[in-house]
Image (cartoon, rainbow over all chains, first blue to last red; front, side, top):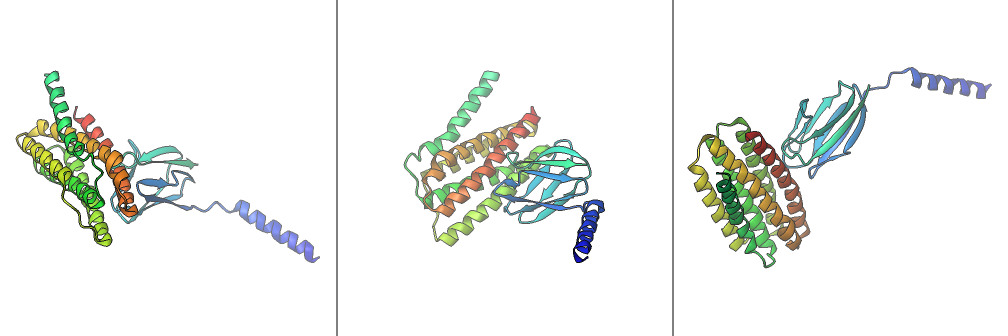
Length: 105
Length: 174
């Protein structure tokens, strides 16, 4: 009896997990010594990328012909992902800094 | 015309390469700190001239990026030498760098418009190449303090970024 209730409870919990829409996440990308870390991020539409700049100089996250986020020194900046697909981005001030976002629908 | 231009560029490269050639002897940390700081100040001065002179939006934006980054890096350098109680020491390389930059500024001061933009950006590409080469082959390997070495390594990454940025702007001016 007690075991049956437990099984039912865990089944309900499993159902709740499957039905509930996946909550949008905030994914942190650290910038330290001109390196985006992690270099590649797997995300989905609705997620927010937050760049945390530990350097003393300003950087950008720029997609050629697309969006650009300015990231001030020792500050953070974020962007909510609205389109699916994979994009490469770089820092416009230091084009040797490169990152990639893979956005699932 | 083209020959004249390339000869001119070769002469420029030769002149700006010369300062580091004199530093064949391994520089000391106080000298390295002075050289790195001087190189930054000289680029800020060139940037200030470009901000004042150029009418080209891209060139002015690039110059402002140079001014901002080099001032930030030099502030780090000053903080570090203070912390390490190192007294930056003037030396032949710093003096030669300053002399070459002074000559370049005098040359730039006579130019206007597109000619100025082109000369400034081309010098920025060449200058960053020289300084990066010196950091890689001489200054970083010679630095004995770990924190100084680390700052120079980060500086190198920043200035390699500037070199690529300058090349991009140079490409747009053509």
